[in-house]
Length: 183
Image (cartoon, rainbow, N blue to C red; front, side):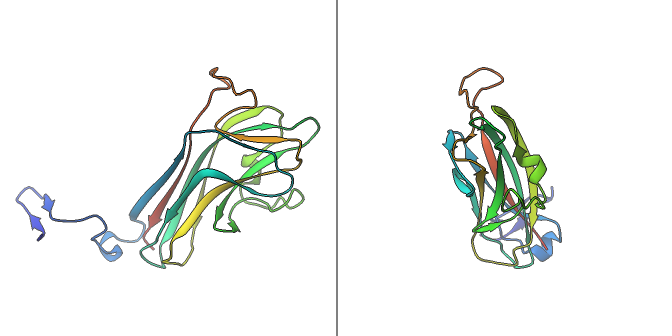
């Protein structure tokens, strides 16, 4: 179908993704993909990052100069099982940990403090962003993983430890959005 520009400035015949990034310009959004998790998840973990099933997204950049802006909103609950244990979450691209420390003693991660929970029974929605420069045109997978310091603690996604439907402890929705930004 040919491109048609009518007298009102409307264009017909243009398909999604048809404009090259040189037309859109640096900083323009080339594509957006979203993953939404509406069910609950829980795990008991001890010193190992564990995938949150269903909280991931894949995107294939159209240019190796593109950046990927990842926006995350995760409803995170924690039962520390007694004591001073804690849990955290992180954003991964494949096997690469992008934003959080790799161990409890290595707290130099960019978003370690906002995504760490130290309170038994804590439940809140945590929002964080990361601008990635993958220099790739291959399919990229971004996912949320969780980490706890004791097998006797339990991490929850989209629910509190109480798992009630009250306003404070009710279930929620978690999302991950990846946007390709023209480089």
